[in-house]
Image (cartoon, rainbow, N blue to C red):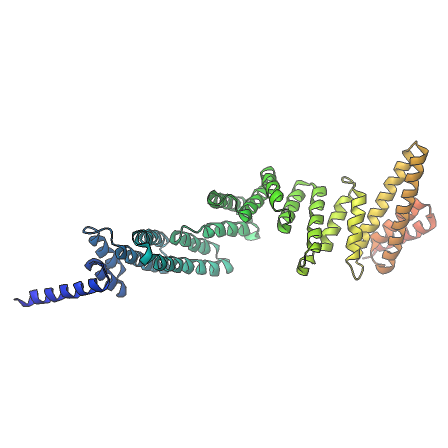
Length: 404
């Protein structure tokens, strides 16, 4: 026997031995494993593909083909070859899934670990880039994560949210509409698989609102409201949409609903903005084009009760509201022909204006440099017929207005 034949025979014996240790593993797959160990991933792919000419139902072959493609994808990432990385991650995924389909008992756990490993590598890098505002790189890694594990829509969802974030920055102001439309397409892609996903529907509604498509946004918000009426984040988003629409009365209602839920809950950290929301709601309610003075007084008095130390803004809004309500009621009394109703309106007007004077005096004592406090106090005193006090406080107002 020649030396060459002896060497060949020895090689065959080794391969047969390896095959026996692996169960039904072919010589091609065994060779591929060795090539992978040597980091010769292209050769590993080639030898496994060659083996498929003889047998195409070996789960080991597909698993290690997935391993080879995964390594090739990593190499492509390191070399900034995005398209090649994307294609290799896709090929790795399909190879792994083929192995799982051929022998789930032996390969399901191994396949899952390999898929998660590829996915987490790209997600981890995407997060690092996103945190550093390297948005383009972050999007690339998230898309690679999706190629590595297309069963998860999280990368697409996160790209959409990243584009939403970018659209709110000054740096991307000129690309805002483009970014929002891109986010909308991505959200629809995810929602096609998860049509009931609440947070995604909420994201979509907010994107539509940001694009000025308020009617479409309102339809989604109203649907979500019926199912998630206790979600304060949703209520605030609806309030913001109402503000965009100029519907301040509706915005105020949702702010008050948020405060009610916050105060009913046990998480005290949710209460930080309660006073500000109540003041905002009261300010909107008391505006002339809304004229919901009763509601304004209720929420503004609630805001005052939340203060351990009075603030000029809350006191001013209360003073202005009581004054405006009292003045309007006085006008209604003057126009009323029914004596009983006229008397009721007059008494109500006197009480409201009197309360305005009380708040005005307290405010000017606490905040003597706030000009508007003296202004509304003087106006309330004028309506009450106290002309001397009104004139004195109006003079102080004018002096403060003229102060540098």
